[in-house]
Image (cartoon, rainbow, N blue to C red; front, side, top):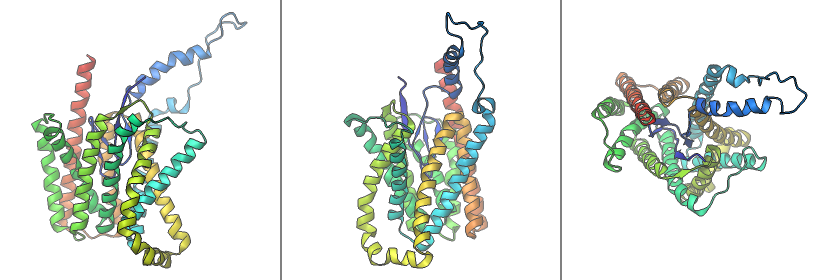
Length: 378
């Protein structure tokens, strides 16, 4: 049975074993997709061949080639498109909700709640079949889920407080936190070239923060806490090993994270929600739109994370890392256009420098991991 490392995903993304992942929970497959197909082909051929001793003429029968095998590049492109599309829609709808319902703790609970209901329904119909979980696995998953919950909530607090583009700019610092944790906590030596590639990220975020028109300390500090939370989630993920598939792992993590997020939401925002929060939100947009917005933002949150998982499993780590950086560019660009956020020239330049630094870091890191795996295989 293959052993797979649990990895986390989030709005800011984090590096786990050389792969830059997004808000969700991703598993690194033990074999590349192409290798798995090669392993399965002899079995498929045997199943399609005539049975021994039958009346068949003995001519070899070739199994029909499916659409996924015939057009792999087209299918992979579709996964990337849907990943980008769903993530952009999630960020836009999420911010629109905060414009008339500024309660990020409660909205974070809704994100997870809708995803958990989706997973429970999927289990009920057997797509996929629920994998059993024991106390030992729960002990491994709980720290990952707690960090996931904290990172998710603080990301949403930042989204509610400042412009979406600014939150994503701050969260571009996650690779820096991951590198620092790897070297100073895990004791792994980070090459100088990687540290140098992170310098533009720090410089760009600093430039953008100094002149960001929507800047406030709540948004900035929350985004930084989110970075730290996802870094620790990455560390705990490396210690948690399981042979469970990614969909089941993501379901269990979501359930635990939901349980963790409910008490803070009730304590911090509960009294305000009961007093005037719900009534004010419904008065502004109507009950139907209020409920539908919360439902769809939760669905988009769950689905874009699931698409991120599917995309990761179809491409090489380097391709996914570059695609992840481009996705951040799409989110920042669309958020500026949709919400009409005014940014200064210095903020724009700083954001561009930070994104370029993340792209360089991701490229170097993925190449190093690729060469390391080739060296072990040799």
